Amino acid sequence: SPVTAHAAYLPSFQPQSRGVWLENTDTDQVIFEQNGEEAMEAGYLAKLMTALMTVEYMEENGLDLDEETVALKLYIQNLVYGSANLGGILQGEEVTIRGLLYSMLLQSANEATLMLGDYVGDGSLGHFADLMNKRAAELGCTGTTFADPAGFHDDDPSQNSWTTPRDMAVIFRRVMENETLRTILQTRNYDIGPTNRHDSLNQFNYTNALMSTASEFYYAPTDGAFISVVSGQDAGIVVMASTGGYSYLLVLLESPGGATLADTRTTLYNEAKDLLQWAFDSFAVRTVMEKGQIMEEVPVKYSFTTDHMPLATAETYMALMPNSMDLTSVQYKFDLPEAIAAPVEKGLEVGRLHLILADEEIGSVSLMTTDTIEASQPLIWLAWLEASVHTFWFKFCVLFVISFILLYSSLLVQIKRRKQRQGKYSRYNARRSQERYL
Image (cartoon, rainbow, N blue to C red; front, side):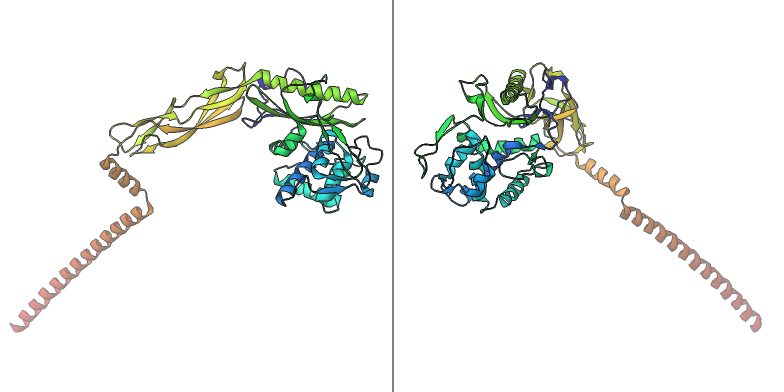
């Protein structure tokens, strides 16, 4: 969970992008987010889902990326007419699926993107968009809706593709886990020719200047990136970077567009670099809790030898934390039973210790017993008897016995009285008989 409530988790500058999601992929910890769950226009970042859908479709159906080819249809050429993002593919030109993936991810080629959508969508871009949305939901995306394979902008918001910074992080992480797509995103240029129309059809990566040593935006830790930059529109970028044993995934959405396309790219790339470098400079994995530390004790029942058991941490806990933060800032919250009953074995887990930082739980560790304790049988019997006294059936039996005794006593009294009356009557009859005889 993000713990941005603490000042140490805030960058020294205010990001200009409306949506920000920055997570450490080693610990899955989000160290900074800004409007991370709000829906924003996905733009050309939608192509990442198209790429993922295509590769998964090929793998699931046992199809070869280099053997399957797709020809550019007239209706697709008409849809992308006048677009600045093209791969140079001509009408009727047959290109392999791998070639189309390179064209889409290196040059953000719109015709290549729609050709893949048409292929996987069985001739329907609308059907492919439905498949994209279904897959996004399967991945756990909660605020994502794709309108088309490329993420085209429309003045009607209902016709645009939408996502959240968090959802885009989920999608890009899955993309980078795929070896084929990761390789493509790390490639500088690629020739998808020869085809039936070209002997050579080179594709150059202009969607990731962060990996180009010739670019002013070069950033060595970058493992892969993809941008959505269109003149006059807000921009977006996803980046994965690693150095010094740490890896981060960054998503920026709705970064403000500049006066020119170059200005927009400058703002986007610089903000991405600044946020990533802030993360690399400011955070490290630190040991918050050592294994075997005595942290608390819990009462013990049914033992003559001891009435408390010390509890120790069952494992070492390490967390990504700001270098400047004092470990004494971590607070403890115990989740323990009121008592434990003997017999007790050493190493038994009896509760958890929750680690709290900046009002957020950063993790938890198990608490285990540190000794073996034998039970005292008389104490167990006494406890059983004490517990039994409070049960319904015990109370019922006691009430039944008391009622029986009272009833029996009453019956005995009545019998005694009857015998006394019978005795008096017999003596009376005897006297009458004697009088009559005399």
